[in-house]
Length: 384
Image 1 (spheres, one colour):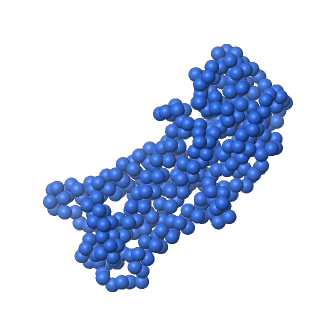
Image 2: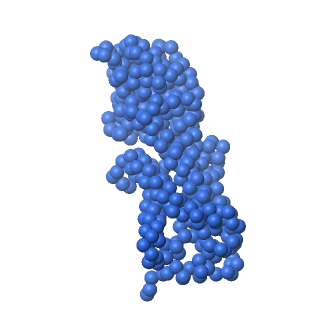
Image 3: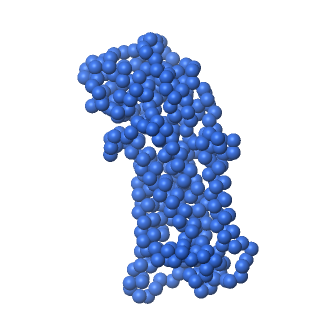
């Protein structure tokens, strides 16, 4: 049995005219996912490139929602794009040295782009579903591969720019760039029909998942990883049982410790309730793409820091009663600690904070990733 060759594929749908148009929107989706992914990475860094802003409070909710939605929309686009260009991958290499070099560069960029693109989309979907069948650290690997993917995309566009420009400026039915073996039979589906079907598939994929971020779509987002349901009308990623904190969280011996320069203050939950209480409407948004609005009541973190005379703009180490997990200890940058909306929450939506949402107290700050909104807080230590 012989291997397939380029001339074996005769469908007129496998055309540069189609590939360029799908590739344009695939590039838009990849670029949006890349830019919002960089924002998410900076937001989660202990020492970001620049002070991550606390406003708008809904900023991270929007950028992470766009990140997941654009990645989801890219899946049908990538599949159709690969189907469209597959015959070109079987083209025999040219003999001229210069053309051979360009051919090799193109093939390498395609190989890297396809591998990185598939990895990003597959691992991103698995992360959204909180399924981790791998041993590597998702956040760091996903971020590194994003740079690989976007770099390969830039190289690929540079190499194919003349073909892309010619295809996009001509009518989609124009066959001047088609392969010599392309059939001229109309077939069952036209090129415009294939494009419309592809746009529709991307739209359906978005509608089926975007409800995790856009509440109005939750009734139709059958594959949304979070419906909005949960204790006190808020979803839960990690339960108190999974974190193994129930006994210590409900213990009468619980104390919140606030420390600075050798000075410490210990506060029971009753002590926290006796302090001035503030109420803020703040969204909580997670890297998986889900988000929800909530009303939080508690003590301003700045008021707690004032108890130990901590200076303004102090960075804070936040420790949880949770002993295991990558986010049992987090850092709160000074601009977040000083923001009047940043609370150590004791209540959620008018009720005592549920244990799965962080009882006896949890951190909530504006424009901050959900993984850093530490639950079951036990210590606040000034580190800078």
